[in-house]
Length: 264
Image 1 (spheres, rainbow, N blue to C red):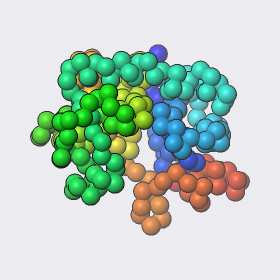
Image 2 (cartoon, rainbow, N blue to C red):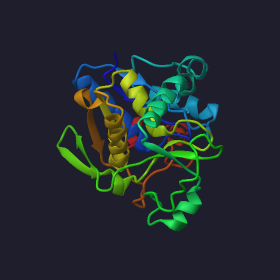
Image 3 (cartoon, rainbow, N blue to C red):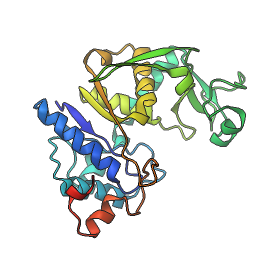
Image 4 (cartoon, helix red, strand yellow):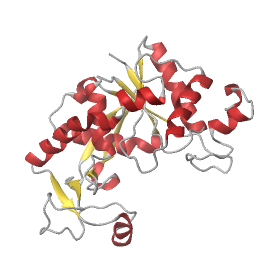
């Protein structure tokens, strides 16, 4: 079984921040004599393009990163490794949450939530009790108790995150009926027995959300998982990097004939 995973999303060309994450994962895996899984998170197909998937393979090769599990080409990924091939597992999680009465339907769009809440985090404001989970065009949100704290054990220390404040009643099934990222990611990490998850510090609330889901589903996930949240690589102007074809992308670095050693 893999020890850890590299889990990019094919929603744009990878950038220096992704490279930093991948190289750190490889170093930590080598120190633990553990194997790496390449898991491409394509549950959200809104921005999916095959050239973005190819960029993942090209970037890993350019960086000199070796992994032991996962696809080796776009065709192999789409045929055998896409998250859409594991939808049945994700829906089982959603069904379990429904059976426990932990989810409720929500009709609001992201823009509506931005207008009615502070910071765009929905915490049950104007909740409509007349909706059904079986209605078309509704998302499923999980009801997080006010003040609920999640303790995240990392390689360095333990962090205390208020899930209600940081994530609110987050979406577990989208309006189109597909499982949300939090469900798919947690399910895959459990299925593959991942022991170490390496993420940027900006994703600590997401980690708390997945641990909350794991607790709601009565899994043993907490017993074996460890997290490492690393500082972000920022742009020259001090901003968080985003996937683009700009000068910060790994594609631009490769096209310029640069070495990975010039990244940091």
